[in-house]
Image (cartoon, rainbow, N blue to C red; front, side, top):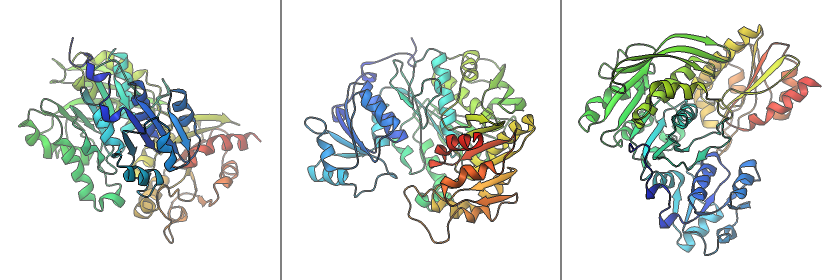
Length: 495
């Protein structure tokens, strides 16, 4: 049995310090996934969150003790108190009363990635990183490895449509996860295989400069274990440049640097061989079909196979090939045909071009895109779908973070101009305080197609109804509470 399929005693238990864990903000996507794995491994878990949610209810059903609201007394939900308190860099402020109380009591406070790194010990790890596409690529890899019979553990940023969960403690020896670069926390991990989908300046509120943002990926590549692999998308200049910079340095440590894309290589990355090539890509409204050529060293001889990706857009086809190569690199037992069969059965991730319903001939979708490049990609896919329907694309966009809105207002406007009409909601500030003059109007005024700024989110459904007709495609876009508007828009369309 190969190391990738072998289970060990270490994959079933927990270190003593993680025996009793209290999680501040336990209902969040990343934190709830961590809680699921801790509970599945026999740990005691308590936590707090600002509000009730489906995620909180699901964790209670699995044995977690969750307090709604932040209160120092929540640290006493588990008998004997927690051995460690877990929080996140961005979502929870340092003056949170539970964190203050934990430090007063001398209870160690760890960030989520530090705990996730401990849970990966003893596994062969596949980590997906990049500015965009992490969740979709990670999810495809998980479903493909499950199809291969590997039963990997995983932690992803969205819920798999197949299983309705964002994390799982598997019986196999592989662990698949997203490596989030937004706060530099990916440097906690020691991966075996890394797939980098793309690199483009983002999260400058944390990094300060594009150079500092790019540098964190170089540092991450240097953490790959000897004998591992770095897989980069050669269609993306940032990822290709990372591969070129890293090739010689990593080769000296026995780490392969491999590429994938629509060509035979990248002009700026001659040291990175293209071992996963997409050709004859045929895009459709609900997906794409492509021929994939997989070359050594991941296979003994070049292999060509047709692949159908059920999510629209060329970017999703690229993500699928990245997932394919990642699976082959992390699991020596995996076969190209079996991995592709798994990818073809992938049903998507919550909030990634997710169909919400159709009323009066108007189709409504929802997507998490919150960076200009992501918005451009999802609207390009929506245009393919609208073209097949014989209708138009109406984008309903909610900017996420004041800093990102101010930094990328022009780029957002250019991306949104791929739609036929645009409805701009106000900024979802999340962890940030408002900035003077930074509203959704900053973007709507620069859009080159008909656009309107709707400051009150409750007015969005009526704005959609007044701007749509049968066969149109409506897409709610953003990382905030815009996702909740789908049912209200559908109800308004039917009234």
